[in-house]
Image (cartoon, rainbow, N blue to C red; front, side):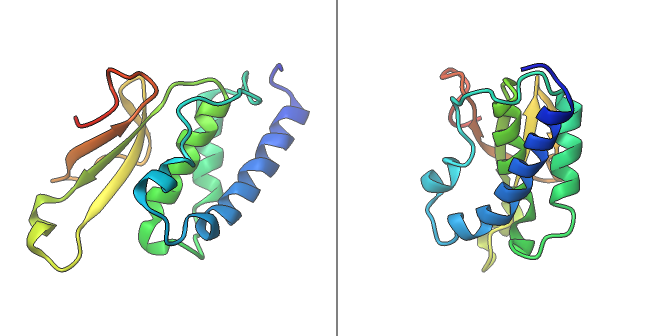
Length: 144
């Protein structure tokens, strides 16, 4: 389907509904269950939408979180990855931890989305060590 007003309206409605439902649907789920929100293979109903448009809409949709405030990057990353895949792109969802937090009571982790090796949704924070890449290419899936 070519990029047009109807496609963009459908995309925005789908993104808005997904952003509102996701916090409830992934609550108290394990890592593997959460990653189902970032499909490695999916249909491409939004093919034709530019990546920059998708990223801008994701960022706008998640800018004022009511739920998942403490896991904002996860919400952004899952939605960014999901909708870039729906548009036919091949993004990577990357996860990292702050090594200084390994001895702390709470682990400091972060995730971000890269497209063609460049961060597009969020970015690695200073001091973060990448520990996992969620990517459709089997040679790139796994530990960094």
